[in-house]
Amino acid sequence: MKYNPRTPQDVAKYAVGRAAVERYAHDGARLGLGSGTTSAWFVRALGEKVEEGLDVVGVPTSTSTRDLAVSVGITLLDINDLDAPLDVTLDGPDEVDRDGDQIKGGGACLLWERMVADASRKVVCIADDTKLVDQLGRFPLPIEVVQYGWMATRRSVTHLLDDLGYSDIEIVRRSRDGQPVITDNGNFILDAHLRAITDKGLLDTQLNLIPGVVENGMFTGIADEILMASPTGDLRLIELPNRKPARRTSWYK
Ligand code: 5RP
Image (tube, rainbow, N blue to C red):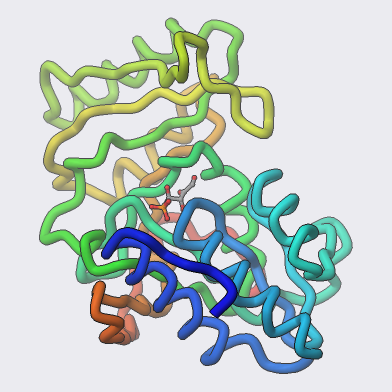
C-alpha cells in the first residue's frame, strides 16, 4: 500500500476512493476528477492504476486537483476541448441526503465542480459515511460571489433567504488565516448558516439569479449514485433513479 490513511474517516475516504477506481476507471475512460480530501484519495488511487498502465484522461475540478493529478501521472483534458461528455465524474460532498442532493463547496471549488458535473454523462458522489444526513443544512451553504460589491450581494442573499422563510441567518465571508478565501476564479465565498434546508430546489435556482452570485453549493439532482464507505471499509452503493435536478442545463443528459 503506497498511501497510509491515518484517521478512521481517512480510512473510509481511501476505501471509497479505491472502490471508485475499481468500479468506474476502465481503460479509455474520460473522468471528471472531484476536489477535496475524498476526491484526493480517489485521484491518488487512480494514479497508482495509471502507473500500472491504466489508460484514462481526467478533467479536474480545481487547480489543486489539477496539480495532484499531474503529480501522480494522470493525463488531463481541458473542459473546453470536450467533444463528447465525460463518462463519469467522481466528487465528494460536504453533506449528502438520501435523495443524493448535496451541499458542496467546502473546499471553495463549487463552480468548476458543477461545470464538470454538468459535462458528464454520470455523476457519482463518493463519501465516507459521516457525510450522509437526514436533512441538509448543518454544514453552511457556500455561495461564490464576485468581489465587487460583495456586501451588497450578501444583503440580497439575506433578503432572498428571508423571503424563503429563513430568518436570522448568519452569512459569513469565508476567511483563512485572517485573509478572505479567494476561489480559483478570483471570487469570494459566503457561507450561509441555514441550519436546516427545507426547499433545496428553490435555493439551487434562486440564489443564482442574484446579481453578484456566481454559483451556489446546493447541488440538487446532480448525483446519479452515491458510493459510500465506513471506516471498516464496508461499501454501500445507493442508486438514484428518481433524481430531480432543479436546474437542468446540460445538453448531454
Ligand atoms: C470542494 C468540495 C468538496 O468536494 C467537499 O468540500 C468535500 O470535501 P472533503 O472530501 O474534503 O470532505 O465541494 O469545493
